[in-house]
Length: 205
Image (cartoon, rainbow, N blue to C red; front, top):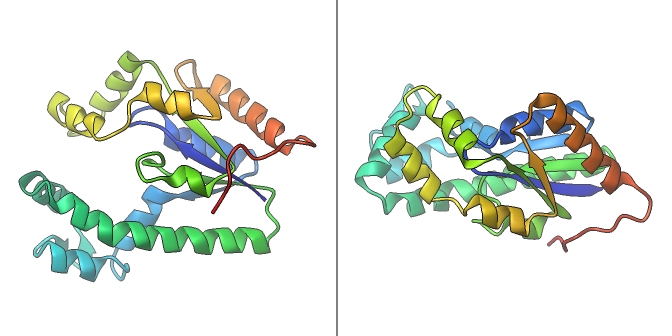
């Protein structure tokens, strides 16, 4: 089973690209979706997050807006939050991989927003970075509801620069030229890794 790591900075089109991989037949694990599930009523993170940040749970679920505000007020809290969430997401990912192996999947994609920031490249056979020019990224992010230039700069500063991600990537997908072009790039990557004789670029742990 080939394991690809998919990552990219905010606004680069990673979620759309993940959907293209799924459309092409790869099994995709979405780390962001896993976090949403963990924060939902009954989710494994709810009680722990409430203990760490009292008052952020509403109707049995973590209120992400309240939590974000708390983190603005207490930047050091992000480390506490990551200590709660990252192990739970990792356990969810491992269960996904076990199921994929049992189903004899040929290619799986781990959609990990902070793949390089968290050392996730050690988990995969090759890394795919989704990218676009800086002006395209900015336009996309600022078009999101509630986004401001200040919020964008804060989020952008937390991530490894796009140029560095591209340098460290095994494959790069440029999403600035439309959906059809991105789909073609996904198709080529899958053809490459499925080709006889292809060898993993990285060693998985």
